[in-house]
Amino acid sequence: LDKPEGEAAGAPKLRIELTDKNGDIRIVEDSNPYNLATETINVRDGLKAVTVSFENCSIRTLWIYNELTFDPYVFIFAFLLALCGSALIIFRKWLTKRPEAVFAVIALCAGICMCLSLPRDKVGYDEEEHLKAILDISAFPEGRLYLSDAIYDQLSVSVRSSSDLIPGSLEEMRELDHYLSENGDYVTGDNVFEHDTMKNRAPAYASQVAAVKLGMILGLSWPVILVLARLADLFMYVLLMYAAIRKTPIGKWLLTLIGLFPQNIFMASTLSYDPFVSGCLFLGTAYMFSYFSMLDAGEGAAFRELFMMAVFFILGCLPKAVYAPMMLMSLAGITAPVYKMIKRENG
Image 1 (tube, rainbow, N blue to C red):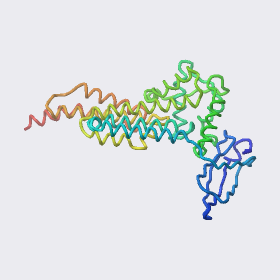
Image 2: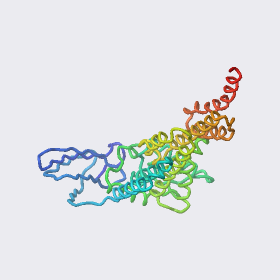
Image 3: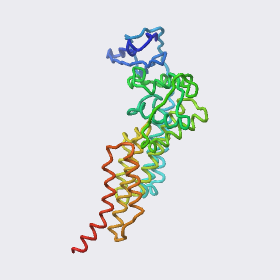
Image 4: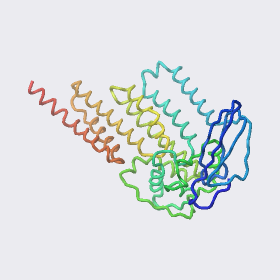
């Protein structure tokens, strides 16, 4: 594609009419990222005619391939699906007594597939804002990074970073990886990046910051660093939910189901602090149930359970103040023994 200079003309768009052997017409519309030189659309149909129209660009060359392509991500998904299914069948007697292990197996298989197959572009919720915070903390102790335009575009809200321009095919994703590998300079870039991240959010980004910092120290390419950061977020979420399911005395399978909701796995496979928030709140709730179960069994106030409940509720609420009322659950734990004593004395 030949594209106009600047962003004033808008994003390049293609509209393709596909006519199959029966005369039925299917229309495919796709926007092309600014940093890609080609547009690739997988048709997967037997065709009789193809009509192409375009906007904000011109077509320099058109290729039509009639061949079977190999998608490694489909292979990885099928392999992990078979591995996960086999593990659940072979070890079913052991796993039925350990829902936390069932969660870990399924969550890791699904999450790793997402982390590897999602384009190295903005796909999560407000991912550019989370990336700013991660890079800001990763810049310690220097306090600043020197980023190239390719990376800086991913931190801005503009036409170049629109979620509508996410690569829609394997070929486009490979081209994006190549572009980011060649142009993603985080050492000597022209853009001086400085950002002021809220300090209370640092614990939620800790795993992702560690992955990014390690990748920069090792001199890894920018796409690889992004994948490592997403994997770190996934592992943190799985670890917290595993601990929560293992700890809670009731509702283990219900918590397993909630933890495996596709929305939760998707968010854990992108750059975000939300998986840390959810994991900490679930773990705090598990400690709360454990604390109350000890009271009901007549074992007295379990200070350790109460303390850990408060710690994880506070950690979960730090990045997102809207969850602050959850911290009041700690007060419920403190007042419960007093309530039981008063009730017992009053008959």
